[in-house]
Image (cartoon, rainbow, N blue to C red):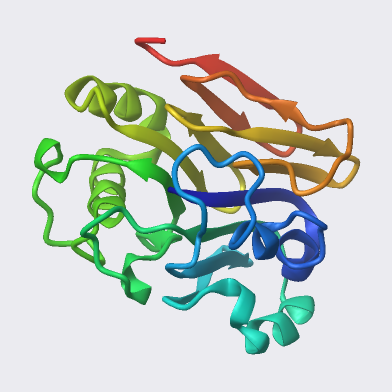
Length: 229
């Protein structure tokens, strides 16, 4: 239902991750190559990055392919840690900037690629929007993103039809889950990319098996099977 990307490594421009690659998120907004659900991601986009330890965000309910102002500024935005997404809204969910990832609790940036039944989630007054992804993000923040793998396994058990690919970063760690949708990672000399699908044809891309947790730190990448896999 969405495509997302995370980066942890040396400072790079947001444009080099989102706009410049031949099959980056800018292209995935209208022509994703591996998306299983939906054909377009035209219901908004968001980019979050860390300025030191402070998470910053730029979000819009418009399609990324038509946002010339972002394309002009993205080369000047640089960060060592980035979370970006293009959105295909779940049927019935609002299309608004506050419904667009990444969501934040002031420490983590978090994106959800998938769908979840809001009735299976605890009620929250802190969700940024009524959309399923925002309510899910609030539940994960309340539970603690450090326990992301356990949380996704528990939510997945309560919602067997849910798709729970999560991407979260706090500036020093990048976490991701596969639960019903695609995810790939690329180890580069200057850092690690985790993305819903490869943004180019580099042979170094590695597909992550379903129902796994990916943990990226400064010096290692770890894949861990999730409970219920």
